[in-house]
Image (tube, rainbow, N blue to C red; front, side, top):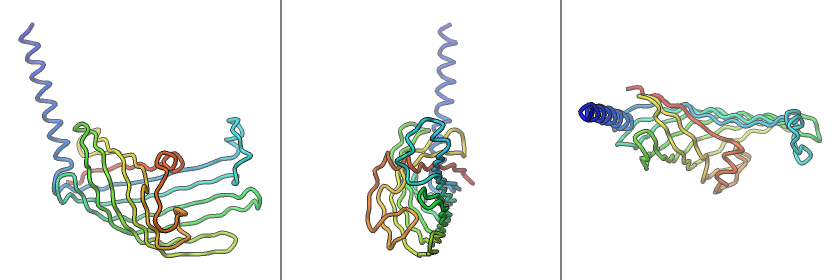
Length: 213
């Protein structure tokens, strides 16, 4: 009985070591990942009324905010990645007083530096991302406007590797930002910091990544 128990413990130890090795290799130097990052937020006045929410304070009837940012990341050292990004953002809201739908589109291209700075377990990591991108914003409001601007940002979050070659992440987006001009997609000016958890609830961001090599 004791012998069987020792064999089981030995097999479990080997399995844990293999998993640990695979997770380490996933974020090791020269690994290449493709990542799809997305943010989504919406408000529907009718759904809020059905759920007995207080809708009188809302300035809009309905709103939808969406952002998609594909990235390609290459490890220049263990747990340190550099890469490029493109992205599109969409914002739509209906003003209560004017009963008019306003929309805006934001297009971006840029680069980022990622660092998985703390390994909680072989599957869980805390991460940060420092990036910069060039943006073009088109707004279809009462008067159509457009703006080109530069944005730099710092994100933080945590990542989970559920199986080999796959990773899912949750982000606290735009903890610190700089915008060269306004208006912009984030409605910020110059250097600003976020209210981390409040902004996450308002506009949460997630990502799914896949290792290519």
